[in-house]
Length: 89
Image (cartoon, one colour):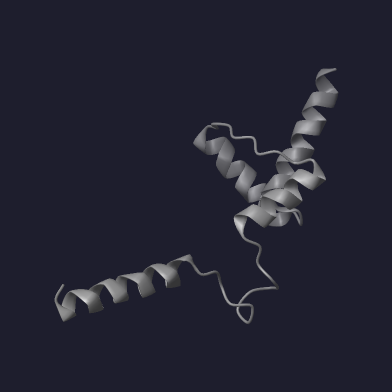
């Protein structure tokens, strides 16, 4: 390999490492967990991922509700589902 090719490979490795690195603590609101750690915490709480396809207008309504709700989108969807399921029984 040429010397320039070696430097290009080194630059691509550095670039890839920078993209994969998380946000430093000084810029975040505390320690960030990687996906594996977050998944373990969610499993310990009994949470499971649940993907659904929604109409764009419905998704926008959920997002606007989540902005004013302290728990975020997950808490809004959970409360709405619990209310809807309780009403249907």
